[in-house]
Structure formats: structure tokens, C-alpha cells
Length: 98
Image (cartoon, rainbow, N blue to C red; front, top):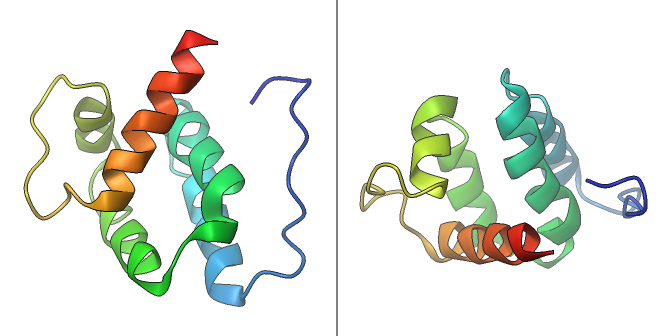
């Protein structure tokens, strides 16, 4: 997140979504904190229950596997290649063009 970007207000989110934000921004590798955490922080207000299930499943995978999937270094296994994951990839592509 750049200095000019304002963090969204998460005070009205459910405990499940607030916990997901914490987990996405405290992954264990700085790269994933930025990539996954930035996406989750800015898009979680629109996540459905199914999206939350997919996010929680994705966050169980090792960081370096997720990093390789989102950067296209490795193919995404089918059980992780969800609508949420595809939206994250599109978000990253837009961010990289800015």
C-alpha cells in the first residue's frame, strides 16, 4: 500500500472478516503481507461467505506456494483456483500497472 492510499474503515466488519485481515497482513513473509494483505484490506467489504471460505482455505497454503501461483511462476492447483483467487490476480495486475 502506498503512503497516499487510505486504509478502509473495518470497524463494522464481522469478527471473521477482521480476523482474516489480520491473518492476511501477518503471513510470515513481507511479500505476502503486502500482496495478499493489500487485496484483502481493500476488498473484504464485498466478500461473500463463499469468498471467505475460499480465502481461509487459501491462507492455509504455504506462503511461497501462494506467491508462485499469484505471480504465475507455478500453475494454481484447481482447489485454489477460485473466483476469489482470479479477482486477486486481476487486482495485482491492475496494481502493477499503476
